Image (tube, rainbow, N blue to C red):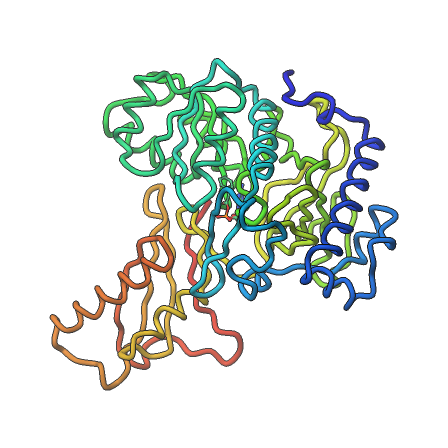
Length: 433
Ligand code: DLL
């Protein structure tokens, strides 16, 4: 079993917890002294850095929410001078504005180190050829896997998304052994390969899928394994945390969370009090060493379970089970985060449209399809097809520009969509994972 950083990865649990506490104390002190936002939040809760004497004391610290990221857009939560920022990434916020994340040089280094440990734990190394089929750009998937794969000495094929036939050609010609992608794109690659007369299992060296950025199931993992001969490794992360940061090891017993870099709590779904290992709840993440954009007790919204016993691979850091859902209404369409509130925000900028809409998500073949049905206002209702088509195209392109994902719009008659007495149910998610 190879380790990237054996001393840290196999550190005795007590020592690891001591290191985690040391890093937590330093983080709280730094933010109390240098971040007006965190200082104010801590004062509101009546907590000072001196109150943090054990890991349990973290429960005294204030939470941070996605809403805070929006309220302090774009960089008001950064705690380093602008000249120390070397990179920005962004991901969708709950309304029109994206969430911006800034990185110092050390932040990029820590991010790559975290994922390099994960890639090594799967058994990847200098002999591997890693095709990165996650989007390069503001999304963190592409560059995240790129830097980590280079760090472990693998050869990177920076294919990004799309042009699937060429991806398959490259897999064959360059002897690609691992591919980073969303699980649904991995399946799509399998489908296109079959149409081209290529069997991923028999005609290529592809054996590992670094898959994540969207929910998927054990069933889908087994299908990818049996059909394509590709071991589906679950990879987890988020732009606010830096990007893809963690994965399962080759033993596939949960996603290793590096405790020297992060602190993970699981909250009871109703009381929001921390629960123990083995109990399902909402994940709350503290990034212990991030410089530009640190996070204390960030309510990321994902639901999982933590396991603390040492893994069969020898690593002592805790693991989480597959993400089973979210506490909010965030949808993930082709790996891209979409909030129904963003859809509403964009639709309402069109004076011809009414207030009622419905989002229908389907999985046709391997990839997600999103349809938005929206009511016309009575005075915009017409049987002039050209006029309606022009309106539909305008609404579609506005929405696509905001969400970064293709959407089909269906304009419907005023009053034809369901009305709700209680909470509106605007999303019909028909996907089966
Ligand atoms: O999805 C980063 C990433 C890239 C992770 C590539 C893994 C692989 P965001 O776009 O900010 O960042 O979305 C983060 O995606 O809070 C989860 O809800 C969801 N998510 C990420 N990985 C998984 C996974 C990237 N393995 C949000 N299973 C997170 C289920 C996942 N959901």
